[in-house]
Image 1 (cartoon, rainbow, N blue to C red):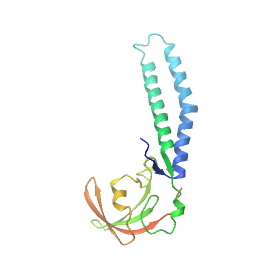
Image 2: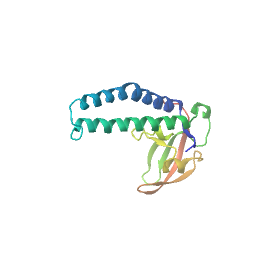
Image 3: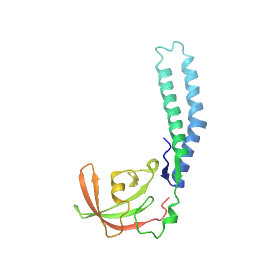
Length: 162
């Protein structure tokens, strides 16, 4: 598990902030909840205790997972790609869906940063994989859950949209 994965500086900062929050706020809080639940007596039928222990396991697992991501993160300075015409990590792209004649826009980001509400898609998603390397005017065939979609690349931009 030594593979590096791309992220922006903002994505790395978000991961580091989440670890800090979990370690300095959530971990002590759940430890206190476990102590309080333990004080209620018999642990075998103590729902509060079991719920707190389950939450503690989640928090510890999340901390380990985030630390693994942080240790493997490769921060990519998207601003360095400004002016590039080829779709790659960090690109904001506008596409024409050839089936519906509707414009769609995506930003290609690291796995941890993906957010469908913002239309930020993971570099590992089928859509991003189908777009990587394309230029404005190119056609891209993308596998989606609803079947293959064909897009025309309308624009490629590397403006930072923090």
